[in-house]
Length: 330
Ligand code: BTN
Image 1: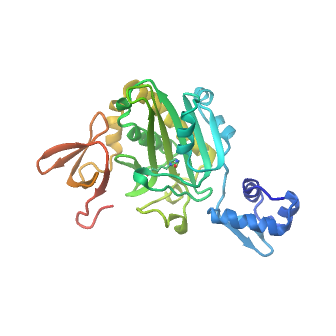
Image 2 (image 1 turned 90 degrees about the vertical axis):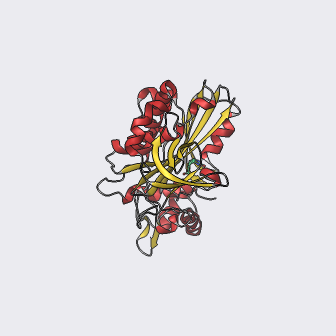
């Protein structure tokens, strides 16, 4: 007999300070079995403290994801048109929706997971999030258009994330082309858009979002760039994870509708208001080559405009690093 990790975590979140023996009798297992599962939860990054005489408690409040609660906070038409599935653990929410795209599903579908065993970032990187310390989810959307018409989609999704966080009272949010949401040059969220279907249409997009909520130094260790989390942004109490997921999902669905109607062209001005690269000296790291220049905004298809020594050129994929100018940079 073993206790499910989710149930144990939920019990500790609901009743901080419950002793090992109380948990053991509640779940009909031994104290040793509770301890064994606590060690597993800790290895996943759950901030559990155990002190003799004080029971188990979480160092930070934790709200587990619940599809019905997320749907209840969504606009009614979105809640009706977008099935939401919540996993405890999966390899990757993007991979799951890509797999399902092979067999067919609702035109818009959302998938969230508390844990990803193989979370993926852009350019072959991994995405790490401690249990309860982040939000990791993906949205599937089918389009009748060609894949070419989806140029700039990941930038538009970034705008959706900024809108959602602004609704919740956060400020100082920036977008780093093509897909990072930043605060003070530190990455808060990343977006991974993967396309499938017929290049000439119909096609589909799986849009994956990873957002840092509360990361400690240990959770941040595998991240190979400057990072931040929502809990470190002063002045705004950290929202519950279900409300947060609903706000993000709602804005993403809204952006998808706008994008489908009007392409990225409709978002150019809004992107410019959050563009952290604008006017900065950058290096464009592409397939095997690097080019330097000055970032000059994005065009109507979401390509980055760069002013180089020989004139302006467009970049539609790649990695950007901000060049160190008089001690500044990221
Ligand atoms: C990046 O910044 O490199 C993109 C990160 C995207 C991570 C999210 S987490 C949910 C979804 N599932 C994945 O495996 N990746 C995306």
